[in-house]
Amino acid sequence: MATTADIRNGLCIEFNDDIFQIIEFQHAQVGRGAAHVKTKIRSMTTGRVLEYTFTSGHKINEVRIERRKFQFLYADEMGYNFMNNDTFDQVSIDEKLIASPKLLKEGMEVDILFHAEKETPLTLEMPQYVVMQITYTEPGLRGDTATNTLKPATVESGAEVRVPLFVGEGDFIKIDTASGAYMERVKQ
Image (tube, rainbow, N blue to C red):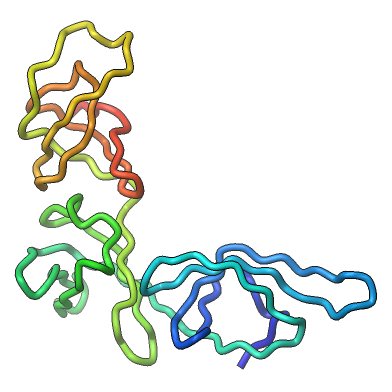
């Protein structure tokens, strides 16, 4: 059992029958009143961000979270299947726990956060960027780099990404997994 004095960025706590991670916090003392801690917390199960103020000395339940490396194998009707490269254990994760499932491709390494006591997966963290090949897009115009016009393109995982006009089929592009946006063309 911890108190508000133990609050730090990244700490995972049990709050309102859910597990939350602290994103930001600020200790504050107002006049003669009791001190308090203003926090921004993110739900590990739904991804929702809340602002909550704890009074100083409030007891909080700290939750131990483990980060483990897994490799994406395949998706089926049961969910997305991953394998631990060290122990070869396989785990199936529901699509709602993955921020951008369309950007997963076979063999990709990801981090899965587990509740240490219950051994249940909480969320999946993708790498910040992925490099994928474009499988289909309309023909581009050579030299058209002056405008900021975008066109739809389908990448090897089946996801659709908006790319500049000069990008064509067969090109490799870097995609931001948080927003699903095109970042740059990559030489392979």
